[in-house]
Amino acid sequence: MPTMNKSTKTSVVVIGGSLVGLSTALFLASWKVPVILLERHPGSSLHPRALGYTTRTIELYRSVGIQSKLPVAQWTGGPPRRVSVQSLAGKWQDEQHWTPKAPPNSATRGSPGKQARGGPPRNHLAENFSPVTAIAVAQDKIEPVLRETARERGADLRLGHKVVNWSQDDKGISVTAIDANGVETVIEGEYLVACDGAHSSVREALGIKRTGVGHLKILRSILFLCPQLDKYLDTGFGQFQIEGREDGFEGFMTTYGDGRWALMWSPPGKVEVTREEMDAETQLEMIRKAVGKDIPSGEIELITSGEWQLSGLVAEQFSVSRVFLAGDAAHALPPNRGGYGANTGIADAHNLAWKLASVINNTSRPALLDTYDTERRSVATVRHDQIFVRDDYKRHVSEREWPGKNTPVLDDVAMELGQIYASSAGIISGTEVGEERPVAAAKRPDEWNGQPGTRAPHVPLQKDGKPISSLDLFGHNWVLVSKSGSWKSSASEASEATGVSVTFVQVGPGADVEESDGGDVGRSFGVGETGAILVRPDGYVAWRTVSNSEDELRTLSEILTRVSFAVKNS
Image (tube, rainbow, N blue to C red; front, side):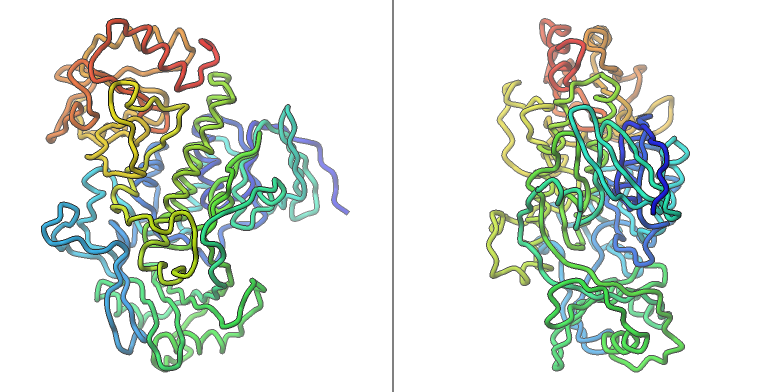
């Protein structure tokens, strides 16, 4: 019988302590929101899934000051290279491209660059639009950094706690959990964020259905060390699609870049996860089959094995009242070279955290939280479709039908840094300042040029003689950027009228920041010398005007009230 403990109160409860749950706790704690995280396991999984962290994810971690704490990357840049092979030691066939190769004169294609062992060319074009670059680091190397920093900032992380019940009503949420010693705790809070994975019990309890290509297959995997395989990385390939064999075996091998390898395959006739154990000899034989040579047992170190379901499913709702879904609970997307899995969930967490903070602090009305579903579900749907219209997965779903089946393949940089939030609330679109309404799901930052609803573009700047990015101006509160000092008093008065903290940043010689290294705020943000850009706390453009208006105070106050859902001026 569990031992009852007294109840605990907090603002937000997070269920699930993997990458997305830990990121949620970290982002909330960075906003000084009281948060308790519950995770049934005592630590990171022995079999990490996520490996690559996109440029945007590193920007988000940079915004909360942990970029320098991240482990040394095994490689940096874009998607890893993949080749089709009959076995690693056998016949090698064609390279398999994540995105169809552009013609030689295409502006989206760079010149060949030096590449890390198993990694991508170092000229990945996302680097042209950001002060950071994507990195490849195993999930179990990132999670300790997230745990440590979240705790330092006040998050209460309770590992080894299994959630056995939860409920919500008009006043808040309640979660019951039992720890490893059988002690039961009831936690009461205002909101619940479910980061409890693809088989989310929270989502199931809410009755939320999912759509997409559906369940694909069951995969078994083996994580192991085998130093003699590292020589294959000298080719520049880090992923190996095993196919075209006479025995019919098909599998996939990849490196974590730190000596660890993973072999994955789909057992014939397997229709559900049973998590049955594989003995050591079976695992060794599977590795030898994939490699194509008889490797002595003493040269292979088995770490762990696993079994899991490969799916493409997006929840039809990301929230119900006070409960929110994030990560795999909201969108179960298969591992892919675009980084559309864990990275999408980390961005969910960032989008939701500032909104929860603003509502909990009584700065914004609860209606602000409705924009989470509108904004993040559309992103997840586009990413789902992009995975399955690309060659890596297209052949596996050719007989299936879903709404996005005929979607064209989108540019990599557009997908990484240029997906748009086309919500009617929280964003004031260009149509209201005489521009055309955007119709594309994603464009590159230099094509959006500061379009409301998109990530604020990176512009090289100087502050106090030191180089910074325009992105360093954002992530802490609302920011109004202009080359004209005429907006300063308007920003201050609008902030006073709405109760929403707004920082005004003037760009220009002798001002708060100066352009440097060819940076042009006007061109990048699509405004003139007297125009202004209002950027949300998550670094997304909420509104812009090409030039100043006759009544700056009235316009800015009204705009700020609308996009922030301000309590004070409503």
